[in-house]
Image 1 (cartoon, rainbow, N blue to C red):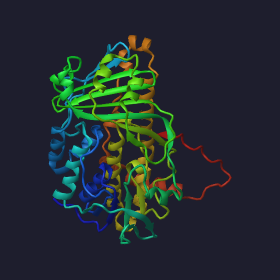
Image 2: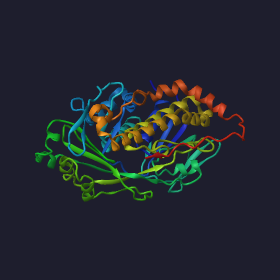
Image 3: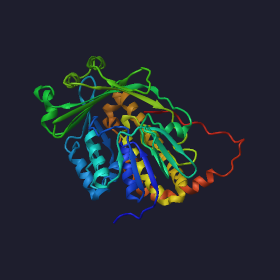
Image 4: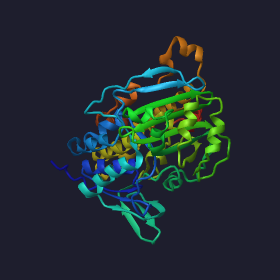
Amino acid sequence: MPPTPTGINVIIVGAGFGGLTAAIECHRQGHNVSIYENFPALKTLGDIISFGANGGRIFARWADGAIAKKLRSLCIDLTEYGFRIHKYDTGEVVYHQPTPPQREEAPVFNGHRGELHEVVFNYARDELGIPIHLGQHVDEYFETEDKAGIVLKSGERVEADIVIGADGVRSKARELVLGYVDKPKSSGYAVWRAWFSNKDMIADPRTKEFCENGDTFNGWIGPDVHFLFSTIKGGKDCCWVLTHKDEHDIDESWSFPGKLEDVYKVLEGWDPVCKAIVEKTPSLVDWKLVYRDPLPTWVSKHARILLLGDAAHPFLPTSAQGATQAMEDGVTIAVALKRGGKEGVPAAVRAHQELRYERVGAVQKTGESTRDRWHKTDWETVKTNPKSIEFPREDWIHGFDAEKYAEDNYDEAIKKLAIKQEPVDEAAPLTAAPPAVVV
């Protein structure tokens, strides 16, 4: 049964997972939505991406579960294999972390970013009929008290009731919301990333075991370094990521071609299997992990422009939650707009931030804590408690239902906003700024 039309017109800038989810969820809630994307064509680029059960719960509601089934067919299946965590130098498996059983209503996905993105993109455009305008560079955002819009490179102005800036870590929408350019800073870490076929892996006796027995997932944990390696599609494709110290200053361009000789230097003294995997790599990306201070707000002055996903809150890869949290954003704003109605868009946008801000900050911190857990491992502790080195899968993160939470807590968020807008004692001390968030 189609939703009751709300008459709310929504422009979304950016067709990544966050932007697409926001569009699909706005469509589900009865809003009129269109997407503007800078890229001229869809390309299946990238390497592995993860969606927790909290993201799977969102996918599972689309097309009566058909989209989740398509995604699962492209994803790694670790039901039998689990996650094997090795000590960096000896190669010893110190902990074999089992994979939780898949739940139909909240599945978990790990697959090729480009392939999964294509499924979601095609669902939004072809099955739901959401207009996606590719090759449209947004030069400017603007808003008034009752409208918001974008100016395209062609000079065309497009207006709506709300503009959602899902335009990534280099967001132009963020400039309007903050009133200044928020520059990234070096985090002191970088990641090498690669995806390739199993052709050379399966021909080498040292590495063929990873490709002959279905999907696998292994991690080697060392001082200030961790190396994660997966095989997928029954062992046909291989991918790895290696997080390491990196002190280079970084500007807005943070991704470069990587060099194998640099990887070999970091892996000196490590389990030889790691180098045996890396040397099969035809090409790799050197991805600098930058950080930004937490934004004071994701909402513009008139609350007609909202930052979503990486534009508002980039995540460390060790959180395995960046894309999923962007999806939760998309669900929340769609519900908030429905509850607020066409006359209450600004209140709905502010309520969205009230519903999301604290949760996002808490989930962001897990990326830092997991990285530090691995990079500063006490191996004596691991001997007595191997579980201490596992990858955390916390119920408060994965058991979350963004749609239900937004529905159940929208009215309370509106009440909190009313209290916050009451006159305050200007002599009262200001609260301390939140700590910097690494991305």
